[in-house]
Image 1 (cartoon, rainbow, N blue to C red):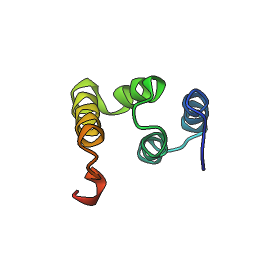
Image 2: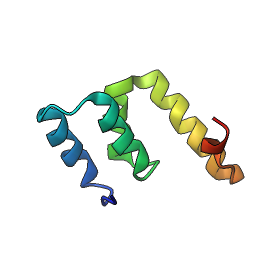
Image 3: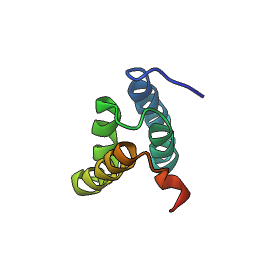
Length: 73
């Protein structure tokens, strides 16, 4: 399912408020645009600042070298 960049955050917040688990909510955000600022802010709230920085660095590295990082791990 595709969500526009700014609509995914309120949708996920509503799903979390309705009782959705944090894991599925995080998966929904990660499956969307990978470097969306609203997504990163919500992801930071779920997994913390340090892990979010590692995730963003991982994505930037993959995008800059055109590597499919999901294939490796």
